[in-house]
Image (cartoon, rainbow, N blue to C red; front, side, top):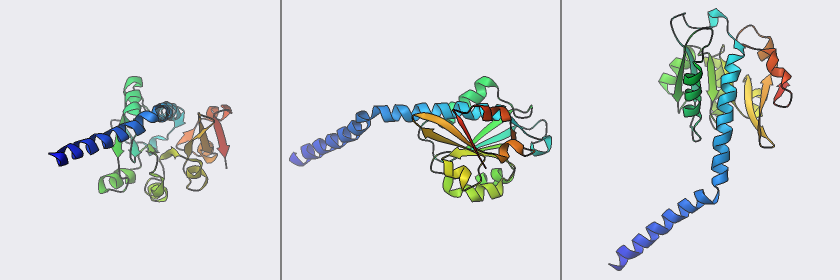
Amino acid sequence: MRTKVLLLVLGLFSVFLGVDSVLANPGLVAEKRKVTRVQAVYLKHLINFTHWDASDLPGPTKPAKILLLGEDKNGMIETFQYLVSESKLKIGGRSVEVIHFKNPLVPDAIKELEANPSVIFLLPKSNSQVKKIRDLSPKSLLVGNGRDLVEKHQADIAFTISKNRVRLVIRKKTFTRKSPMLSSRISALRNVVEVIP
């Protein structure tokens, strides 16, 4: 009987410790979710300001694909899918299909990457496979998190956080290549966008 009571007390104590650590920092969780929502909105707008050649898109009756790769702990997938649905987002006049893979290198994900989806968004902590992803999908708009993604890994656009603001680091080539080509109007947003060579 004493052992059961001790186990119950230890179990409750460990539950309270776990709850306490979450409750002690609710602002951090709320802030991460807020940043995620801002990133989802920015991603939708970036897609709206990007032009794809018809040859880089699926047939006229097939949907353009957006791949979200990696673990989602802050609601990016749900938020982005909601925005896509509500805005009736289109790429090159085609409907959009959003596909998520937790692991970007499982066979099904590789098959989708080899088909050159229109957009690839790397969720945080999925950046370790950037080179392989870029090699599999050279014609996709590659977006993710962290300045290094653009500077070192040749991604097109990266989200960064500076002074509690979401900013965009954009590779200059993204404005000048034929497809996918980001509208130069985005570069005019100087307090949000940084263009690098």
